[in-house]
Image (cartoon, rainbow, N blue to C red; front, side, top):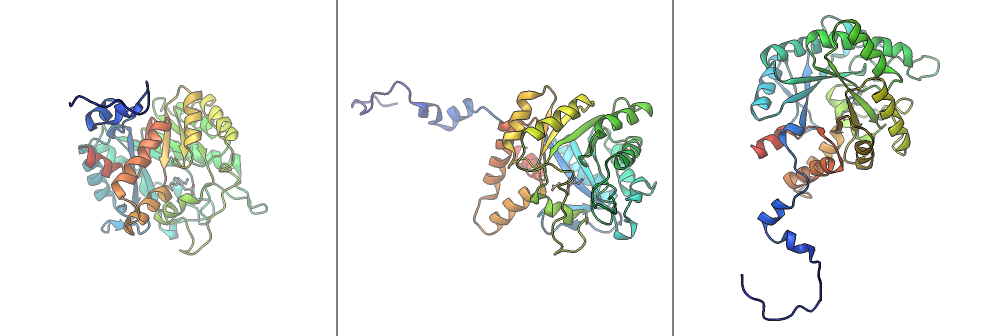
Length: 339
Ligand code: PBG
């Protein structure tokens, strides 16, 4: 270092930039770090045995047949990813208004979970619990024909049966994403009564009625046609304007026995993640949803944003806000970068 010869113009005691002057000092003073062990990779499984199908609105994401899903899980695990969240794409001929196929023994999700668990017993399998992959209307539960509103208690009954089947198949954690009232307590009881006391519940506690689920609905085919208007789920998902109500939902899920609480989407709801982190001792998960992923890819594609830098910043911000666990379609990319 050279010895300064001139006195600085400003008489400052505090110069915070000292802590940012070199890469090494920036590393020493970095407060938040993204780890591969924070990440959960959401994956889609399809019923047919054809080649993996790319999902147009989610570059780099595929619908896998079971054999390829198992391979992908092995690959992710070798990169250090310890958990996957599985979603089925159900053929339209298997859908009906009641989502009956959810409980069919032939449901591809059950076979997928079994096969992945057999091949990779240490990989944590998280399985979504909701009826939207199986209903022809695309709602997460049974719809009252008169009012068009999703029926709460009748839906919860089916979700309990579905949770038991998922546990039997080998799911380590079930993740109800439906936002029905009382479903966490009911599912806890159902799992306990069938002997699955050690299977966890990751509650989608603060799941907002978001426009950012669009690409996911393409991926699981819960959209009637490509140009159909977005499905209105506001009678069960949270109003994006409401933070207090999100805290109420999370508190109820905790009281009902949830093991982990989730906020979804993530990037637009950092305040919710932070508030929840400050209020609960449970692990907080955040789901960087399909629209967040698609948005970054689309802008990067046009050369308007740098993909890797935007991706890393988006995930670091979610971690800094207080998320312990992050579900993200970037999981594999990040694992490859960190490896
Ligand atoms: C449905 C479900 C959705 C997502 C996960 N589970 C969509 C919805 O509520 O319509 C969205 C995930 C994403 O957008 O990445 N139960």
